[in-house]
Image 1 (cartoon, rainbow, N blue to C red):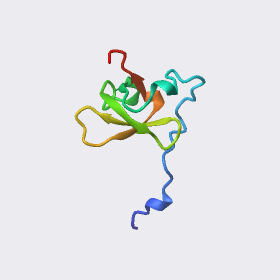
Image 2 (cartoon, rainbow, N blue to C red):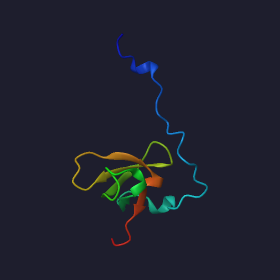
Image 3 (tube, helix red, strand yellow):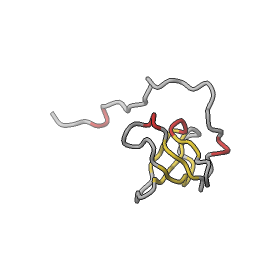
Image 4 (cartoon, rainbow, N blue to C red):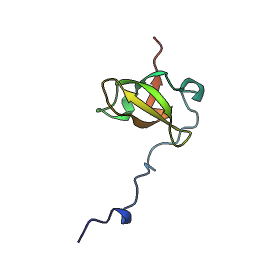
Length: 86
């Protein structure tokens, strides 16, 4: 039976906890701002630093290019913290 990608549902991470209050204000997540990825993003990304390139498709996303990477990734704002020593 062939693989049918259209029939598979998209993972929406519904089991993630809802945040009552965003710890980082949206004004702090502007393009050009240096950020560090939170440890809660997982062992592969946690602790890496990068720069915000643009807002994401939704209001809770940002496009980030991590240091040393050629491409950018989209992260939820709960997984990025602004660097204080710019």
